[in-house]
Amino acid sequence: GDAMTGDLGTSYRTGESVLGALMDRFPNTLQITLLGLLAALAVALPLGVMSAVWRRSPIDHASRILALLGASMPSYWVAYLLILLFAVRLKVLPVAGQGTWQHLVLPSVTLGLGASASLMRLTRSEMLEVLGQDFIRTSRAKGLGPRAVVVGHALRNALIPVTTVAGLRFAGLLGGAVIVETIFAWPGIGKFVLDSIFDRDYPVVQGFVMFMGTVFLLVNLLVDLSYAWLDPRIR
Image (cartoon, rainbow, N blue to C red; front, side):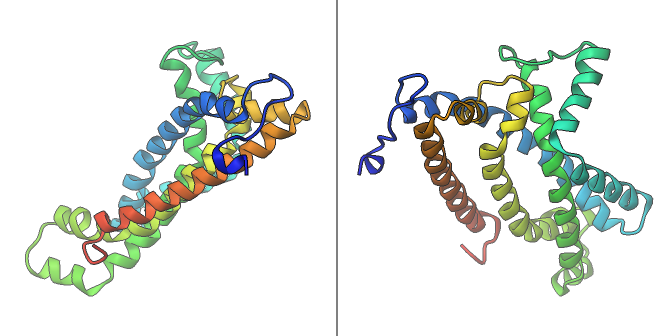
C-alpha cells in the first residue's frame, strides 16, 4: 500500500527516502543513457542504410565487421580502452567524475557502442526487406530519385522495428548502466544501487526494481505511440 502511494521506504545506509534518492540520481543516468542512444543511432542508421543500399560492397562488409566487433566487446573493456586512449595517452578527456560536458563523453560513447552494433544490423536487415517490396519498385518507376526512395519511403517503413529495439535498449541501458557508472565514478542510479547491494540496503534495491519496472513500461508506451507518427497507416 505504501508503494502504491510512492513511499518505497527509507534507506538503511543514508536514512533518506528511497524514492527521493532514486529521483535525485536518475537525471544523471538519463543524461549518459540518452546521449549514448543518440550516438548509437547516429552511427547505426547511416551505416545500416548504406549497407542495405550497397549490398555486398566494401562498405557493407566493413560495417558488418564493425557491428560484429561492437557486439562482441564488453562494456567494461571498451571503457578502459577509451580511458587509456583519450584520458591517459591523448589527455583530451577526464578519466572520471562529473562537472563539465567533457565528463559525459566517455561514458556515453561506451554505452552507445554496444547499442549501435545491434541497431545497425537490424536497420540493414529491415532496409533489405523493404527495398525488395513492390511499392519501392513503383516509386522508382515513377521517376523518384534514389534519395527520395531510400530516405522518404524505405527508411520510414523500416524504422518501426528499429524504434522498438531502440526503445528497449534505452530502457535497458537506464537500468543496466551500473558497470559504466562505476568505472567512470558517475553519480547515477546504477552506482547508487550497486553500493546499496554491497551494504545490504534492501529497501533501495527493492525500490530500484519497482522504479525501473515503471520506467520500462513508460518507455514501451512511448515507443508504441511513436508508431502512429512513423507509419500513417497506423495513424
